[in-house]
Amino acid sequence: MPTQLTFPQFLDADPKTRAGRMLTEGDVRVTVTNARTDEHITVRFKALMDNRPRGGNGRPKPEENRNWIRVPLRDATHVFMEVPRPSGEFADKIGGFYPKTGRFFPDDGADPERVEAAIIAARWLNEGENASDRVGRYFLQEEAYCGKCGRTLTDPESIARGIGPECFGQMTDSQHQVKQLRIDPDERELISEILEAIHDLSEAGQRKVHQELAMWFSQGR
Image (cartoon, rainbow, N blue to C red; front, side, top):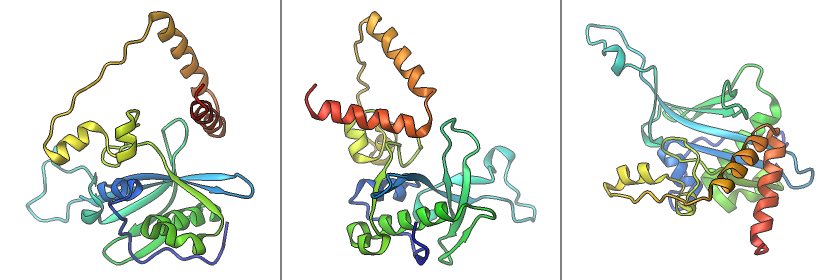
């Protein structure tokens, strides 16, 4: 990873791009891959509002006072960056960005390469292809998760949009049709076994399977 980059002063992603729409809604995961070594780091950006009480008699009710609330980027007081773990629990913290002041603070003990990956991803989110001369030779790609609720996306239209059907319906006040995929019982059992086997792989192994399947389908097999 490079060592001379600094975090951009503002995070203002382009909503015309999928990654930009996801960050605008508050949640995006970007994988930064070194084109030379194929090493990669996935960074998750979470836009949150600090909802901790400020004292006085107007303290919110407990159910209305979650300490951190996921919000669209425009409403965020903090944007936290972390490296998700395959288990989905206890992600590794990288640092935090304060939109109101434009300051970025790496987390104590954060791996320098992960900090640099977060900086590269932030510049890419802000500037897209225009950032290529500043982030070096890296491939960047957003993961297939909903930018609003963070759930995994499976529908091709939702993946292309970066927002899941339920969240998109809430955003546009529209209805969506839930499609049920008909699967033969024997195929369903086989699919279950395959998914279970993939789940036991490391993150790198899961990514390799994803790449192989993408190539398999692109060749019309």
